[in-house]
Image (cartoon, rainbow, N blue to C red):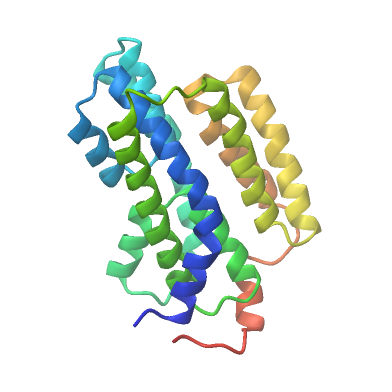
Length: 240
């Protein structure tokens, strides 16, 4: 039977992962138009589980880029998982290695943000919470991709929609994660570093550069480490 923390992760992620499913549709349509076979499009969403990497790959393939260019671009985008994984590791020190590897396989911006926010709010088992959120995300992303593949010929999606949904999605994640002045300072700093990276860094490396600069500067801020609130106080409801 699923634990209470797992169920809370599922419930907390439903709204965001509805948007994730929409991006899955966008990816499915874009991959088909770029020439990827339907089966490979769906399998890539099940294995890669990274919208940023998959959208970048499809765009480069459509533009005629070779494997080396795709590899460099995707590597630049994926390096942001290093500071994310380091931050999450503080919450799962007592979790078995196999379970940590399972969490790392679905380490996404959405469920990472939700898990850090839940830990700050006193979630007693953040690894179970994240597992529940990850399960919802995988279902939404893969089913959305399959829908995009199935109905790609009749769906006419304006590219502007993706440019609007992405900022709204991450603004929502930021709002969930902010709980104090140090978080507000970090959010403002991240916005500033993002603008700076957009001005001086190649597109494929902007997210990683902004994340690393923000992490390096924010590490000097006084404040509590992620998960400290969870250790000081826990909700009365324990694992189910």
